[in-house]
Length: 498
Image 1: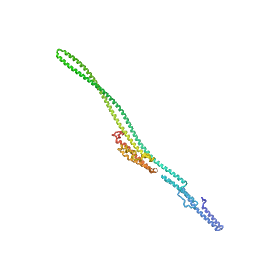
Image 2: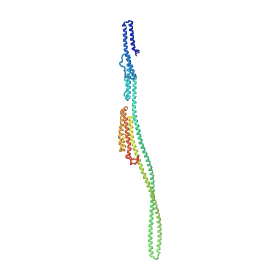
Image 3: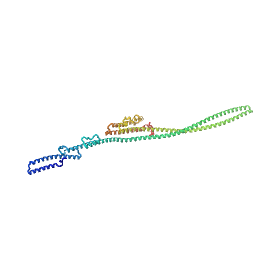
Image 4: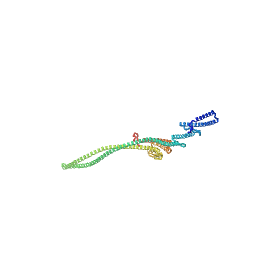
């Protein structure tokens, strides 16, 4: 700074005036001519006036500089020094201070504007380095790089926040869905266990029935053997009957001869009178005839005894046959009961298997809807050019659940049940919300909290309607049992499903 500023200008002016006064006093004292004194005095006064005015300018400018530094100290950068005298020694300093404050204020305004916009996630507001020099310009360049990083981090955090919300929702609902599937599989396992038990019972009964059937066959074989024996006895009885007939014929012949001899004896006796020789001959013949008759009678007795033995054998065999027939009847009745029980168990097994099949079909239908939702989540994590997107971006009737409902087993086996007719509406709604979320992916969703919020809301509604679908599918199982069950009093598993 100029040496003029190293002393107090006002003091110098007063000193100069004092010196002029002393000179004037000496001139008067020593009677020096006035002209000789007046000229230096006037020059001194003029010079003093010039110095005084310069001093006032410099003092005013210095006061403004002091005020500016005080404002800067208070953090206020708006003040500028105006009306700067061009001839003032401090004028360049004032202009430099103004320029420096312009740099600082512009820098602070740019920094503040950028960070305020960044605080609102408006990263398009970048620092403008025009007119900024030196370290301020480098600092703005660094700030711009920092804002780029902030934008990337914000977009990354925004994306991760969306994925986190969707992932949390997906995990929660997936866990609940897996638990429902686990319950369904438990029901299937229990039903199949009952099938195994009933099948085991049926196998045991059938095995016992085979033993009973073998006993029946053995008894029937015994009956056949006895029948053969009875046949032989009957043949023997018939042969004996023929012998009896022959003996009877012989006796009849003997009787005829006896009658004839008796007649002859009577005739001879009548003729002879006292002559009885002829009678003696006849008597001899009668004796022989009597012997023959005795012999024939013996033969008849023997034959009758044989006939009696044969008859007793027939009676005994008949009794045995009757006893075996009664036992066979009992065995056959037991066999019929066993067969009836086997039939009942078979029907029960069929009911259990059919119930398990129905639960499996319902579980598969719910699993298809669950997979459709998971594909939707997966598309958000990947992109629209994926296999999951192809599976999601179809008509709701073309999904696996839609095909099952409208053209598959659901339509053919359950369409008459009340809950079946209620499934289509929530299924359509769930599909529509997934499609709406997919539509958001076709826009600039990564930088739009509104689109991301809409996607989360759509997935929430899709989950809600999918739960309704699962509820109606579960109701189908109960309705199938209720409307197609057998007579009251049957066990829950004893159902006629088809």
